[in-house]
Length: 538
Image (cartoon, rainbow, N blue to C red):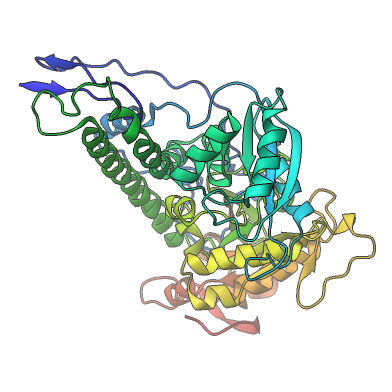
């Protein structure tokens, strides 16, 4: 049997044909990566689960815990094989050159016409582009040029005169090793001609963001999603290489009379790789859905925090949970995975805060689609909190970008309508007061957190149909323990002469139904003292 080995990287030479069985490859160990901030579900910790959950029968069992802090079922026997296959898929060369880069940042400015951007200015767009470059280690911006154009959709982006001046300046700057053209995507012909004109590699916004994702991806799922997002770039590079491979002196286009050209082999291998990556992501998605079902069975309300990149979501999660293990980083796209963290509301009801990947304006649809599986957790939340950096000059544009992305995720209408907007970094705006039903906080300094927790509790009760009740229970028997397991106990007032206690609890709809189920705890509860508040049950 003949086995064909071909490099997936476009531009590689013809692969060697090897006869016989392919040799088994030894598994290559992963380099140690810093562990992401995970939920600390430990009894006794702030926001722990010891009797404050408002749901879930029985205590948390010992055993391995998932990213969401929950038990994992036994993994199938072929889990190690799946991991080995995934690691094989993730062995690839970087899209951008390794090492330090001294970048010339070129921003095409549309000053008039339908292409003129709204809610922003050129200097703000340039500042964000510079921040993207500085996110990468050993990358720096050595020169910045804002060049007018009628539309960046032209083949060469700029008019003839501006392009000539730009070429002269870049060619005359020997310190420049690459150009970052601040457009969403370049076509393959555009990139080829600009690189030929300027004599250095040219990157667009998509490629730079993708490289940041690649550098920051820590988990297997995040790395697979980045690998999936890279495939269109690899295909584009392959098309650029067709002319070079077909040039004189390159020999036959076909491989050993197989009827396939080298380019066709590469295209087929890329397609096979895409199918394998999608299968691997589907396995991880099913596993995450299982964890989500376990979480919903335990009836912990889920609050997802979304927002523009670097708006302070992780810092806010740390402030709400008091988890010292969470270490926010002041950089773009520091979070590429959805992480779950337990926290307590004023009623001592436990909620799960989901910290999500940050959004960005002009983020290509293909990149969002690659991470859509991760963002499925948002769709299954009870409440979405939109965190905004109100100190940023483009805060309104950032809000529009986030809302546009949320609509693209096809969230339930009720979830979209109930989004709670939190204005973070309000301490950086003197005298700031939010307009409308929003909450102003400083996650770093702890300002406004009590008001935010009260608003969160109100919204969670409304969204989940939980009730605030006062029940009279007998002291003899398991009644009080049952309520501690099945509800969030707020207050216990003992009545010695009656041998009972008035217990104020927050109870879920399902626990409320179990309370009056035959052969359950019907005999435990002697009666209602009062109903403090409540909402319609679902």
